[in-house]
Amino acid sequence: MTPADRALALPLTLPRPGGYARGAATAEAIVKAALKVLIEEGAAQFTVRRIAAECGMKVGNVSYHFPRKDMLVQVMLADMLESYDKVLDSQVRQPGLSARERLRRVIALCLEDIAGKRTTRLFTELWAMANHNAVVAERVAQFYARVHGVICEYVSELNPALDAAQAQTVALYISASMEGATPFLGHEKPWADRMPAFIAIAGKALVDLACTITPDDIAGLPQPCLLPQT
Image (cartoon, rainbow, N blue to C red; front, top):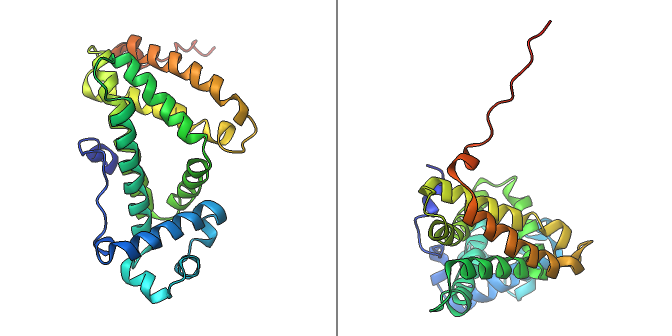
């Protein structure tokens, strides 16, 4: 079982490293500075020295709270998941909403978030970091696994013909379809002005897909018959 698969069974949170608990106010200031550096200046400038300068602290003070940069990434993602969970509580997990409407709202919220500067830039940088840092890669995978878990909950409700693994695959497809919009419709991207239409299309097409896809569809098409060689 991969780290992402294990994470599907966990709540919509990420654990905070021990350093975060030591002097919460100081740690919070460091995290905010780190987030700003990553968004505004990119992964290349995501260094302890640059983060210390941004928050007006000594390098040693930053290192005391966060001995490794991947710990900062872990806290950033945990904070984001907490904020997303609050939005879900207020806008999705409301009585009287159908599973179809809940999923549509999740899709709209995710795409609206992708359209913002923070998410467009932050996750682009995190993906780049994940290519070269196994710990960051696992943290990002855990983050997305929790997002997939929310989507999977509504896919399973909408389409009980799917088993757990198939529902997870559909949730992954929906999530990947949305994340793939980032370089095209994210903040200051070439077609950013088309995002409202994209949200409308995705809200219909992806929810319809979740409702109607079958286990046979997920299994894939049979291999094409090859003509005998002459």
